[in-house]
Length: 209
Ligand SMILES: N[C@@H](CCC(=O)N[C@@H](CS)C(=O)NCC(=O)O)C(=O)O
Image 1 (cartoon, rainbow, N blue to C red):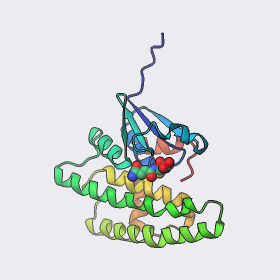
Image 2: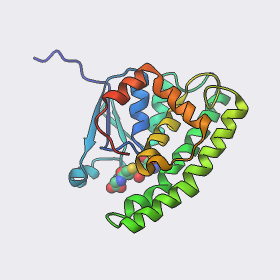
Image 3: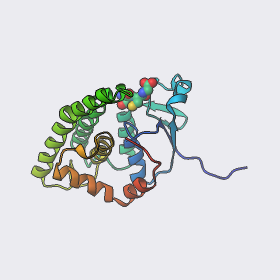
Image 4: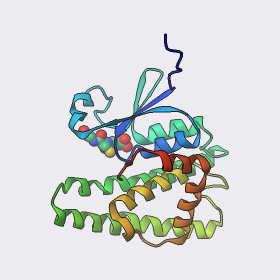
């Protein structure tokens, strides 16, 4: 009989950062072991009907399946001390996380372009111009004005991990074309230096974007 303890959580997603990496980052930050289940595109249709919305990510906890990346992130943030110090701060963290997460929808045409390099370039240009540049510029100004090391309040929260995840996702798609926003880049570096996050980034499976 195996004495190995089962992990409390299972995260179901594809082998990409996308909408799943935020949950992985939270669990890395909280040092919670979990099953990081990654589906290959070719196998996905076999599993699709088993998922509540027919999409991923899905968090499995106590035999139940929770869809929606932000519902998953909020649940984990509340359980692992990333939800701020009071209800108002949480509302601001939540709003910021939503705002950052909106960029994933804007990246969809890049994936829809398939092998068409011309279309792909157009979609990357549009993603940068319409989603990433306005977001990063707004956040850069906000960080400069609030003088804090973090987006909301004075400690790392879900919003900072969302920014870290979005930054890496955008870098994976746009490379060195990311806008140069010094406060945003400094926050990304600061989060990347948190030992548990650094450890995850160094050890995680190769994950393109
Ligand atoms: N609003 C959902 C969107 C989920 C979503 O679009 N998932 C995509 C991957 S990022 C997916 O499962 N695509 C495969 C499919 O729809 O069959 C969330 O935030 O989790």
